[in-house]
Length: 335
Ligand code: 13P
Image (tube, rainbow, N blue to C red; front, side, top):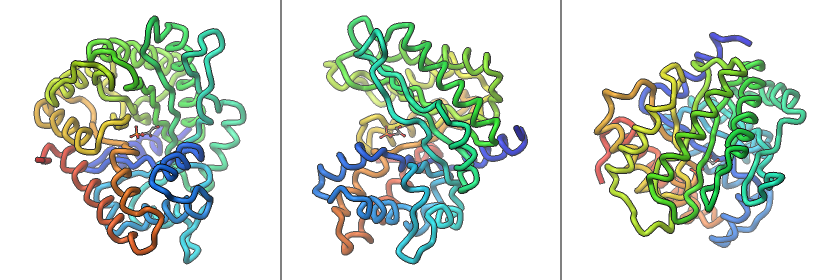
């Protein structure tokens, strides 16, 4: 474990006014999003789409790291340049999703646990050789009647901590993502409570596994009411709840916090990040940025539609959304 390297990678990922793009959708998720906009669900179309993203001119002005999926880390452009090399050329650090998706939790099948610890050490070694310098593992926490159970929160925190430890042993910065889902009709207060519990348990487990916090990035959900809740809060309320929740449980030593978007629209996710910086900048002990998938990519995907003639417009849109998120991170976004 090289602490200097870990700290350096994490610091570069979180530095300046940039953020991360999650372009690591698994095959089923990517195919589902393609199907919705009428794009053929083949490996070649997935390659073309990821090529569109990584070759977007100037993307590195706003993006410090890109999270890839296993299939993507081996792929190349039409000119046979590996995507990993295109990213490096854009001054973007390549990262890799290493969890293998979720399964029902034994004994509590409405909840999920995440697969992927078996053989992870070997896979991490391989990914480092391919150029990945950080990784992501997503745990899913469901709010519902009697949910989440303490056992689910604990099981997910333990897996995240074991994964983080293995990453750091291989000089790969772990992004730990305990995602409290927006599905359901729960209030913002309930989301606050569950997010706080999940992150608190996570840092206890990270501590128990001796994980080096300056070489670790937390990827949380924002604290927000469920999609079906009748009370939807203002931008400032979401920003305040999110920052206060994180301040209560995230140690100041972590390299940074980078949000998932979780089903918010691009405009909502950007406005929430903006409000956090505009109102709370002086209180934040860690860099606070974005690591969005849908909120960055959805408008781009809808413009592209799998057609060569739309590539330029789709890239312009991705560049635009990344610039808006970067502005929000700097507290300078306005609608
Ligand atoms: P969303 O921004 O679409 O929530 O995705 C982020 C992510 O990386 C999920 O694992």
